[in-house]
Length: 371
Image (cartoon, rainbow, N blue to C red; front, top):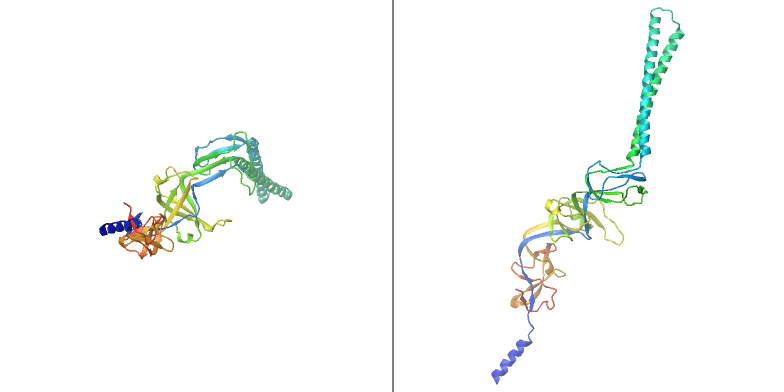
């Protein structure tokens, strides 16, 4: 009876003991830890160049020479507003130039003749021929007048050339040309439709939206507190919602020279990253949402723990002796979303509890590592 009682008591004791909680652990080891700075709000994939094009003057669309998706070259005419009247002005000025040239030629020939006559009379006077002084004076005066007429006619010709340039410049205002090699993203006009330029300070829908997608950049806002740590040419990774893989061939190519201030938003600095690996740029399109992680510091072969295992006030849960969970403070170094550097407080080989949010996982509890 005593033996049975002891067995029953022992069984009761063990049945009343709390069951060990199953936890995921990480054995502390050395590895690479990168210190990163990430954007505070979502960034955007942008074309390296973009032009919102519209004619400088309003009018009826007479020619629409491209459609969405077309590849165009720099200087290529994309659309033209009705400008027959301006072209007629150019033709008129060209004819006027021809008339002015002929008039100038006639005036200059007469000036040359008057000059020869004046010189002939002056030579006769030198050789004692009877020539009145008035005749000589009239000849010289006529020569100078004809010379002035010649110069005036030439100036009138130059004025006509200038008028041609003005007329051609007016035609240029009715045409839309590609400022660079690119792809037509949008065409917001139709043939024979009337278009007007945007009023000052008021942006309207562009007639043609042109993109240069030969290179892409990722622009993202960085909190003003973190911005001073970022320098040009720092390595960076790009994460996109549309693709699962992280792309880490990026480099910082631009840091905005000012802090962006918007109401009800944290003040930020715009940072641009460019991917250098052509394979990582494939299938990207302007407008994709993206995040950036700029690597501002790096430690190789340093003790590290999973960042998800770190609790507030730099605390960790360690699986200690007899599989009892203990809480410990440690001194962290640089960190990222995956790992945090351990400066002191934790030794290599110790087991850190990762599943800290699981029910029953707390200091003093017995635990068993998940297999």
